[in-house]
Length: 466
Image (cartoon, rainbow, N blue to C red; front, side, top):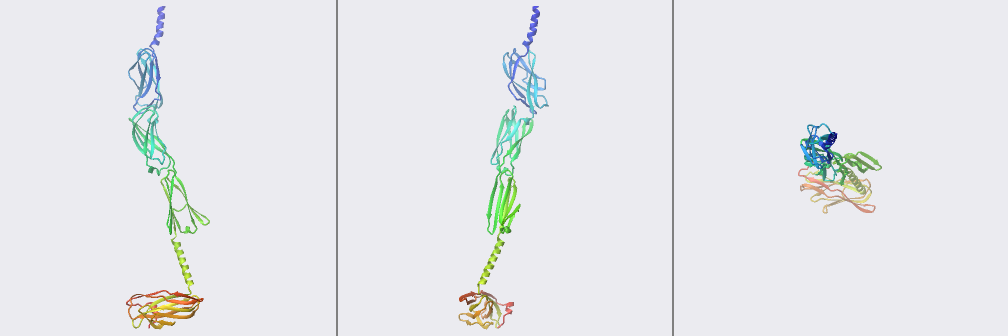
């Protein structure tokens, strides 16, 4: 009976003594496995042997290589830190979270089953790229690439590209690490770029695995329209208004010029205004335009005063001439023509035309002879009152001349000496009395060009020979 009881005790107690009694705590978290990268996933395990001293083997039956290989000896009551790594055999089909069952077996005890959970992801899922917001006034930009997973990247090549820059780097990125770069920018490149969101692309290569990830660059808004004005010219008055959009948003521009109803007749525009509105005597010209970043709006307005100025000057001249003409009481005009003399002498016929505008009294017309000539005794209808060859003066006198009356005084001068060149005769003078006041008027000066051979003109045919 005692033998039977002893056998039962051994059968009940021995399995408990021989069973594997390990306390396992996983120290690491969030383990991942990246598809296409031949790099094992590591698990940090804290293993305490609560049973008898033994050598333990870790293995699985699901197509993963597992390390460490062979057995690990753990004393009774000893605690060891074991880095358990796994890598797939062949291509991974699963994605997302995956639970792997593995076994631990002692040399003197049966195996126990444990489980490890990790995440299977594509390379682009655990990397993130981005930049800070770009300020158009800044000369630099901070760019980063971030590791979102518990995975260590070494010798990873990254090629960044965007509308603003390009950058190539080879980096090491620790788990949950972040690498930052500062890029110098050229503000001239921003002048034609509109504010908003732009794509940042990164070509990633680590080992034999390649991927492309995208991020966002925010180009902050900057409204900056620079306006300059030029105003020059007097006779041709030019106004130039220039608006340059140095910001990065489309600017709505309203430009207004105004002119009066007279100046508008002589004003031209480039480009033509969008709207023209009249309010009483003022004309308003309006341009409504959209100016893109980097674009320039230039409006040129020219007012040409040449034509109206000529008209005004002509009117003023006419008024002055009319006033002068109306202001004279007696007008004289002197003319000289060539006369063919019988003896071949140089001879000229002098004619003085007199037109009386208002009644005048005691009129004396005095003319002077030029040098080197003599006066012929033959005169026209009006005989001179006095001829003084010594003082070289001829004088006609009239007691009165009525308004609207005209007189023509003629005489002939000659010279036996041949004269060449331009021959000038002095002005004739009229002295008269008007409203008990003595007044004086003068005629024009007469000129004649003398040549070796004289040609007869139509005016000469009207003169008589002597």
